[in-house]
Amino acid sequence: MKKLVTLSLLSLIVLASCSNKESVSSSTVPSFNPNASLVDQNIDDNYRNYYEIFVSSFADSNGDGTGDLNGIDAKLSYLRDLGYTGIWLTPIFTSSSYHKYNCDNYFAIDSSFGTMEDLKNLVKDAHSLGIKVILDGVFNHSGVSNDWFTKALLAKQKEIAGTTMSDEEKNYASLYVFYDTVKEASASGMTYYQAGANDFYYEANFSSSMPEFNFDSEFTYTKIKSIIDYYMSSEIGIDGFRLDAVKYYYYGNTTKNVAALSRIEKMVKDNDADGYAVGECWDSDSIISSYYQSDLDSYFYFPASTSAGFLFGSMGGFDGSEKICYLENQKNMITAANGHIPAPFLDNHDMARMTKGNNIMMTKFQLGLLSMLTGTTYNYYGDEIGMSSSNAPGGDNNDSNFRTHYYWDDDTHASECYDPQYSVAQEEFYPASAAQLKDPDSILNYVKTANLIRNSLPSIARGYVEENDTTDQTINNDTSNPLLVVNKEYNNSSIKILINFSLTVTTTYTSSLTPKAILPLSSSSPITYQDGVITLPPYAIAVLA
Image (cartoon, rainbow, N blue to C red; front, side, top):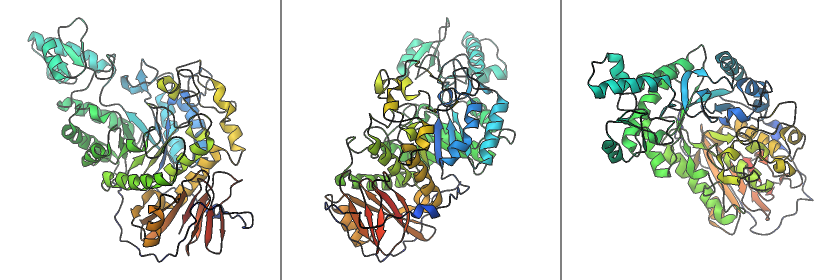
């Protein structure tokens, strides 16, 4: 497993100064663009820029109104050009639901998405572009129509009746969490349902269509291993899994969940020493830290996401008082990962989209803040063009509005996904992708630049946050000053990330280091550099080395 490596502190002697709330004119200072020298390195490890795709809503290749694998395949070059080096596909296996999280056959691609050959072609084409592919591993439960559950019900009937059972039947009787009586089910504290006309019950914490696997059964691990082995085989060659709802293997029991995840992690690594797994543990920093005892590569860092996350500020805008929150939470995230790979993100298919209303500046800045974090970042499809769930019918309280069709504005037939009444009003604020590509100040081109910077300077994703020198600490501790200085070290080299947390104030920083990359909000507010002084307009970011 590739992990972050602790490095010795490199002493830096830097003379720095900054203005507090004094506006600095850039009209007399020539603009510059160090980004012209950046080279996308795309190092072959698991520190990547992942792009989550809700498959049915992304790109439709055959005009049936539903996104599919061939549609994604056709857009791989587009994604790589934007700087994404990994894709996570939401469930693609046979399922009766639109979201596919109740799997009826783990070894068949849902016909609405294509075929197994389509998946093989997608993975092959992705790898040719340096893009890794991970699948959604929904291993906590299956679908109620899965043949495994059908066999389990029949076997459980025999077990309760005291009928002689074969070894296979005994295995299937143990595959799911069953309760012999309603009293036993009620005492469990879990959500349960009667198993059809039978006098026994099954656990299903998400819905009656999603029966929970029994992780006290060795047969369960055999089944999970068969899925992992199949898709990570050389014939298909996926690079790993996003593990769904890992707290529900043994709901509420961290110790047992960690033990189960350790076994699954080994299954991934047995297939590929560089295979990657990221777990969904929707919980606090301390709980996520506990889960890293499983040795899983990554866990999504939920304290960075949602409206309460440290990447969201006050939602009305950031200010100097919130810069320390960003710095300290990044440190906490790295500490929680305990030598593994942090996985920060802004939103996903289960939560309201990050973009609110028509606040383009805030949207850009949040995406920029994400791109400067250590670890493997995750972007949700459409965030890079400013798609917003708040502009749709039902707003941010409707799951379907988090998963609406992507705005291509080309000859791609866009799926309307779950809610055909999705409003196109958002295009008043955020044009579709083709139009944004032509606009140098669009959200899309901002994200493209952010990803280029991240891919070109390995210390951003892989570096540890080091203690600042006295001058930088003074700047960071001054909450009236919007400038934040983040020092990172990786492979015996250091960088400084400068972030202006103000929407209105321009600030400066003086250093003997050279600007290697800049991320301004727009061309109308350029970052300038002259005589060792770098001037950062509102919400601007620069990297020095």
